[in-house]
Length: 499
Ligand SMILES: [Zn+2]
Image (cartoon, rainbow, N blue to C red; front, side, top):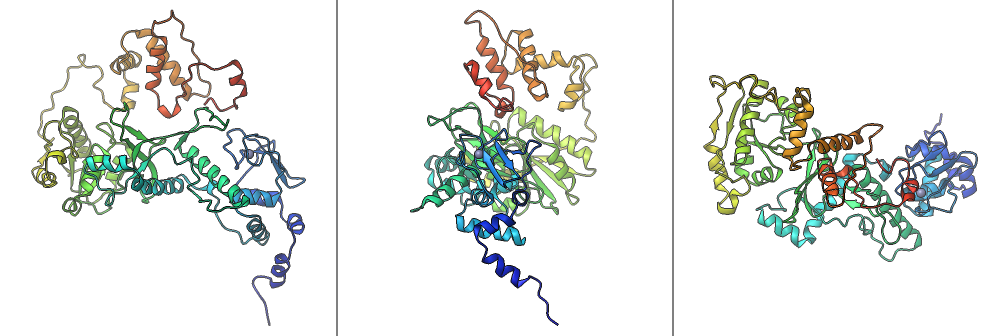
């Protein structure tokens, strides 16, 4: 008896198929399914071949073709058949597209197209790019040297902000036309991916050639990866290397993951730092990493739920050591978090390193050799909460003292009044009524139906100032700033462009 798993004759037949035969056998639906694309009820899709927020690719199941209505699109003006669709999607030659089409007919095709990459895959790819970019950047190397950070030892990158311009993701050495269009669509795919994860921001600006001009996020920053429990890069942190920049720390939107990674499951001694650069500083010291696991918080208020959970899972954990800044904020945060962790883990020892006044882990190396870090660690002081008499504030003197988490804040009495105080503390002085009203109006962007506001007043009375200060309090990746727009610009924008 004789049988064969793949039908040899079928295969021979398919291999000899001409383009028209392929087209007659391969439905557009099969191609779209393969790429995980699902048209809406009007049979429209967000176009994969240009940055597209409102669906502009029309699908025609009768003719098995698709057409992009956007003039920004490299395919505009051309009806795409199944082979064209694959060609653009894969950024490949016509010949390769035909081969792929045959594989789709036989069901052999398996590759993952770039747009379907997960957040983690995109960020892993981009981090490799940033890491390689260090070698070409003098300012980045100088900055790291100044901060005593060794880019050969550490996983660190640099974002010059140029990544979306050049065709660096595919080099067109002596490329022909098909290859050039393949470079272009790879670039478009990369831009789409970066928009998706927030590495590029669409602030509605156009370049001189009329193409969308995207703003790179975390430009001129050294980059550190944040990883999830599986050790995959799921977020990035950028530290600006520009000396006089107002904002120095940037986290990609939807921050998640931990730096440098989740502590090993058998961790017994864990050092917590308040900044990523401090953790990176310790990671370079072998005598420290041999004995301790290191985990960075995101600032003195930055022990997140993810941190707490990760720490909770360390069943062998004996001691948590706080290596925070030698200032008031650092000391207070260490004490607060030590107490919190002690209540969560029965029997957990917590201790703190006495960082010298106004120094931090990293700045210590400005004037000391690295032994100082080990010495200070060895002299750490153990916290003791059990017999400490914590002075209780009298009931009415501090109405805010219920707790200090965001939920406690929201549950506190006179939350609006307290919010107003906080806004004042952020430097918006006076205008008590207006600042609160504007803040609440602005915050409503989180709702499905946001509120709108017009600020009126005589010129020079500080209208622009208060609006822009309130905008500073919002997540910056969600803020668009216009000085003026024409009547028709709102009409011309897509439905969701303003959100
Ligand atoms: Zn298009």
